[in-house]
Length: 143
Image (cartoon, rainbow, N blue to C red; front, side, top):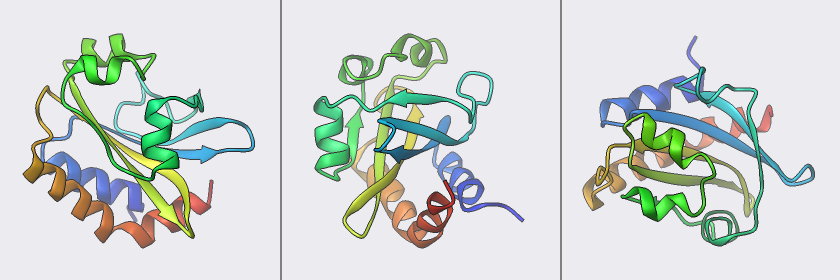
């Protein structure tokens, strides 16, 4: 049976997402842990990254708002792996926080070619996140 992550990945890929990951916040350890990936070679599930208190963190985690970057320069200042991202032919991203009980449990991370995330597509992706919210929260609670 497919997981909530598998189901959301399939739905997002149908809209044009080319790289899909889910990260779960581990505030105690100061890390975001990758719980799901569409690209296991480049972004293995075992991967972690430090929680850096920067503009991205302030917007997406503290502010609980969707981060949108439609060009590489918009995200390069926050993502240490921007060279790998662009080498995959990707130039835009969104990070959708998954919030439960007032806390961000993790993020849905979608990447595509530059300028992919138009207002219409952004609304579609946010709608998918909302539709699958309860299942995502349950999956993220597992760790």
